[in-house]
Image (cartoon, rainbow over all chains, first blue to last red; front, side, top):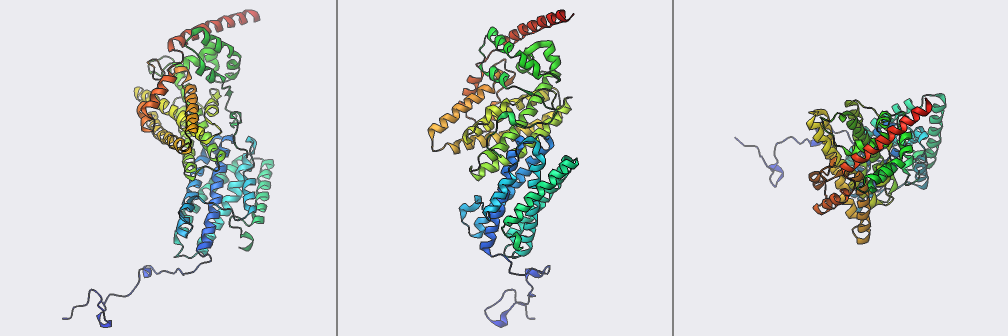
Length: 223
Length: 318
């Protein structure tokens, strides 16, 4: 009886008999190569995302002292930490995208308009402006980031850029929790028509600014 | 949003009453002299009387006069003390307010120093979460022992003393001074919870203490990092920390003295990065205030003066 070969030899008649399916066939891999962003473009986007996350974390940190509502102060504590973790994991992706070892702490605004938007979001200071403070982060910027992160996950190379997808997926999951919390808090705080109007106006103003500058990646208008 | 805020700007809801920080500052400068303690505290009487109005401290003020804070601060928590409930509530409320200010201090470190290294920001962000949990824990513990938020006036003294405008001094003040004090107080609270067999309190505070060690460690490491190329800067930072530690010793209430209400938690502090030399120095500078005997004598005089005043007021209105 001829024994089947366990290991390939050097000639075409010396193949093994093992079925030739690849690891990607189990389960069937429907992903395709090629995405909208090359390495440089993804690195730039990651720096932009990191810029937004880092600034949100610093702004919320500053607000802890000037927000009078105790559950808001304590609720923000965890969100600050998770936002810092988001910035951190984005930073750690940068050296993997040929940005150099020192790039882990690099943030970059896509343009001056977005940097200006961030400063406008950070403006409210006095204790009677909790609504204005929270709208900037939970009503405008974080929802925008979820939208952009999800689009990035869909549009980038599904196999080659999978590490970016994985980290954004984790950030989005946590950010959705932040949004649910922020929305509950804002619904509670905006309990009169006048306060709801403040919420609406602030949302409209900041959304307008965000759209004008093109958002976190600077390309909102072209999306 | 501006950088660096004044302690008066710490925002609170309508339950809170604020007390001037003068009381705690004065405590740190008092000598071991009964007359001088009486003189200093009696001068603060109008302010103390005003700040306790409508709080759970008002009956204490009525009974003891301006000295009630001395009585509460300088006596250790003992299960067999008839006034233990009041002392426990005051201490628990003070800790709750301290945690709130520590949360605000950590948050401001994120905003006030935007150019700080990323790892520093990560440490401060983590501390924000920890302090937020501590506020939640102490709010629950306050309820657990029968108290409520806002029942006593809050002094923003901890934030005032610890939140310097310089990053090395900020971490020296908040992370080594304030969090170091927290280690001492929490170790003593664990001792009390043990004595009263309060497992809920004991376990919760033990977790909080574990966090505080981490925060002190952040402070120890960042003071070194921020000042590493500048010995003069390091010296100034150490001097600042000495001042903070002196103020946070409340005239010897927190010290290594035999009569201290809160002993220095040496083992915990060593684990958190304090050296023996630093702990000896802390013991020395914190032990310089008035003794418990002096405080008791001063309290007695003020109580008598207060009663005499009340008697005269009653006669005048009769």
